[in-house]
Length: 455
Image (tube, rainbow, N blue to C red):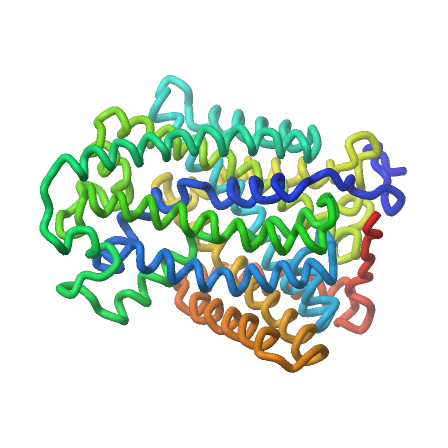
């Protein structure tokens, strides 16, 4: 028994999440309104072919989602990609994957706190940014420490609220669109506009649109709390990508019809709020508030996933086991990790804006997040290839999804911003140094994998 009242190695996480809970978690982490924030940038990059690049990106992410789901069948562990790569390829590579994921998962709640606190300060300027940051970090931590079913219920409420706003937008957009006359090509230009089509531009837009889906991998970190994980993790991961992809395509299609790409946006970064305001003026404020709610859900879900990842690494001795591998005996959650991620996210909410400036702190964090996520995606695809093709049946269904998924993710990773690559490389060097120190130059056992019973 540790001093914090937690038990290491004797207690397990409680299996209580249904397939529906997992899908809701994935949808909330990615956000049902995911394309709204990046709509203007994607539209500009793809020259108006937003729907096309969103759908192409969905196919690309489905390949990786299949890899996550299939590996979760083999290893229903909270460690996710960390466990998959370590078990199938090499423990040291698993450690490197886990270290990159740690940056990804811990940055997500951090940048959500930054974004929400900045927006809340706009809505209520008498309350300082710092006070909002402390408030949201405390709420994230409090809700996640209550237990995973509490988080699932909050996710359901958030999904319902965002779905209502999306439905209102669709109604307002339809009234606006059908209330005017249009030329024959009006309804097909969001898919294909011969005047602006360029294959290289569309591929560039797709690489940006893929980032809309980052976060679905968090479902696999809940494998030890899922009912029937070998079935439900695969279904939830794939279905989440499908739901987000189709919903995103519908949103940007309606937006592109309300505000054609040939017209400039007053502000590219907040283009969707102007689109919503054109469809129905009150939606300008409503959509802005909805994006605050969406980032609240995403940040809370990301903290939940980060705590489970650190638990998997702690239990496997990649991190100090007495702290990170502990489970609270009452709520059966990795309480230490929830508190740790909450404290780190709060600290980052003050440090990143101070280092990069309030306007660019969120952007810097988001770029670094993608660095870790894409490394994990490559690792999972590589692990799926090794397990199901090299060591399994030599058939196309075991070959094409992981190979295509790996090279697509590698291409995206190579096209990250130079600053993200530099800071990400520094993080990885630190992680490798820690691993070398733990194993006396990688001569000892870096990881002691422990897989849970399925109950």
